[in-house]
Image (cartoon, rainbow, N blue to C red):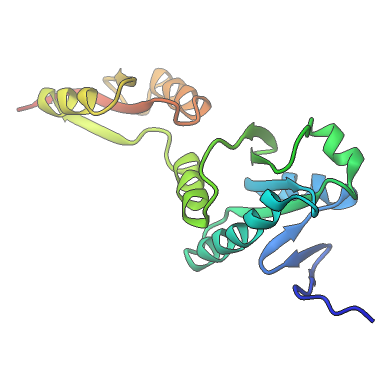
Length: 186
């Protein structure tokens, strides 16, 4: 008889292990489709790096739950789910991917629970960080980062403003973005 240190609890159709979704071939697509934001660790249980990452993912999942976040964390044992790993172009372990509306992007953040949470919050936060009302605010904003994108709009509900917001979302926060109207205050 073997004793499992981390019992897996079934929630609906997808199992959970300490707050992290256990994804398999038959549940992966549903998890990606049903969750606007999901962070997935593809791992190999024999990997020391993967074993070190597991408690950090559990901490991140707990912190996100405590924040009432909609972001889910999942894991795929790529040694048991080889076809799923191949479909997701997994070539090494661990491979961490973030799915937004079913679209994957590579994770390039740190490996602690806090670093994972901070990266996820940045990726899922508003694409436009702040409205700017004055020239001084624009100068301050522009000097705060190497790359900034600043949109000027007469009407923030205009089609152009909506397209700007969509493009800002697509950059996935690779650059700081802001918006302004033509109203001037000093």
